[in-house]
Length: 122
Image: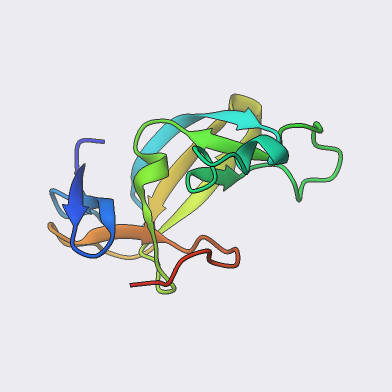
């Protein structure tokens, strides 16, 4: 996490920005997650921060369909044209963020939430 920081982003609240250039394919962050049940992820305090975890994995343990990301994971904003992507590491309860293309210092890092959005994108 040497090349990223969280900042307030106009119209969005908190988000993640590059503090140095990041090359396409570069690992940006690998952070632990706390797997939680889908019904727990829909609690008012968590519903904006839960990530899809194992709900689409055949035979995955029930009650761990979502996850709360530690590190900066829950602070990345959505983009329909993402510059980073998620890689789930189920056995380790971790998620990696990897650059999908070159990212310049000062650019916001965002991924496609790949779910129906519950907010108006900015």
